[in-house]
Amino acid sequence: MPSMQKYLGDYAKGWIEGDVDKILAACAEDYEFVDAAIGPGRFGVDEFRLAKYRNGKYAEGGYLLMPNQLQPGTLAAMLPGYGREHFEWMEKLPYLGGTIGWIDDVPAGRIEMDGERRKLIYPLVPENKAMLRDLLNKQVIANFAAGATKVMISDLRGTRIDSPNELSLIDKLEFEPGSFAMASPHPAGGCRMGSDTKTSVVDSDHRVHGMENLFVSDPSVFPTPVSVDPSYTIMAFSYIAAQAIGDKLRKAR
Image 1: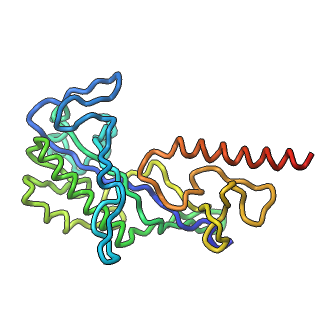
Image 2: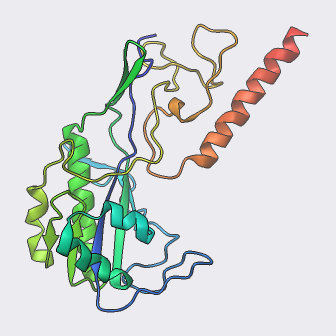
Image 3: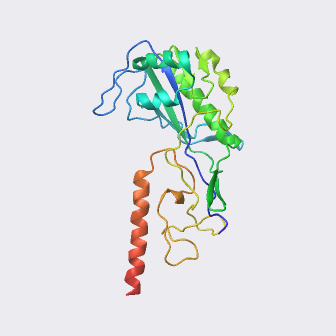
């Protein structure tokens, strides 16, 4: 099966933190941030959900942009820098507000076997790097518009931007292994759905091509990554697969 363990998407995230003048009040009950510098924690910006192309070349978008909700311990672990600089940022925790973006990355990843050991290979192809740069640009603009006095990028050098006039610093960022802090909560692909046995693994009933009794209904069947939480969709996958299995069992009686 030529598509098995290919077309893996990492659902990568890029995030930044902004330092504002006012304390950001948060309601632990419903996670809605009430200060305008970070906005309601439940909402994302849909304007950039679909990537735009001009003359066949990536132009902008392809991600969900939303407020960040990192807890203090997680933020401390992921915030770039060490020593005094790190301490100064964490000391201002009540004044920190940030954003995060979930990109619809090009599914260029794959899984290979090295004996009994699985190896996950995820190259950051040029289009994914372009998405990350555009995402960071939009985040910096949004944070300054909301009142940030300075912004820290999530690269491991802790690139600091002191005004919107310094957006060119984002063009200098390296997106190489070990150079940029990203999270990947919902990796997908590897058993993608489709009708062509050369480019997919399962059909629309979640049945593996060429197999009678083997079904896959987890996020590995996504044909491409999604920049939203896929939990409900995965439950729907299981429902469709269960229906197909039930129909097959009834016919066998």
